[in-house]
Image (cartoon, rainbow, N blue to C red):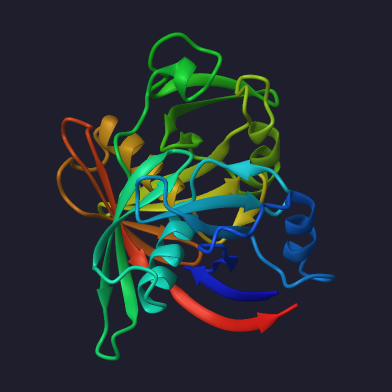
Amino acid sequence: MIFLKYHGLGNDFVILDGTDGNLKVDNEWCKWVCDRHFGVGADGVLYIMPGENTDITMRVINADGSEAEMCGNGIRCVAKYAYDYNIVNKKSFIIHTLAGDLEAVVSPGDDGKVTTVTIDMGAPVLNGRSVPVDYDGEFVDKGFNVDSLRIKGTAVSMGNPHFVTFTELEESTVNRLGPVIERHKFFPNRTNVEFCEVRDGKIYVRVYERGAAWTLACGTGASASAVAAALTGLVPFDEPVDVKLPGGWLKITVSKNLDRVLMEGPAEFVFKGEM
């Protein structure tokens, strides 16, 4: 089997090309291949499948074998692969995901290979039961009891669930709370967790990713963090906001009427291999 390794800001993936329609998702195999000691090593596996009334389809399997609805860094890698390998021959195209059909716009460099991808992430979901969280209505900047602490946070879905907090916490507390919040009963489908702060108009984020633990970057997490920051007046709507993750920077623009979130960032090819 031929595979390719890509990353978006250090959030790394094994990509499998199943556009011929002959590849099936194997969750247990994905767990093995993501193991950094016994497999290739990755935060997840990205299957590129034939489109469903779209140009292509993306399936996302986390390192623990669970399937994610969407992956912001992953979809940029998929878009780069699809353009660089001539699966699509246009700079704007539609990718089907479990979170819906999303538009990708690629920006090739001088060598013709994609360096930057902008994804229309669609509209954020704030209704509590739809995120989902165990709450009626919007859970925006509200108190949340966890591990003998009360922190404020916002629940947002960017096709997958996120809990974003700007509560000032010690690093040791953040390290402890990440996995606790991910599996808290308040989140029926578990959740990604973003610990954020805003400095000089920029958002700094650490992400505990559902199914992958601490990651260097999370595109949907950066998007959810920008939505939560805009809703609480920490950053403006309708303007690109720099979001810093451990692996690097993304630009996120949240529309005032919350009908779309644009994510712009890099995607990089690492190597090609055979198993």
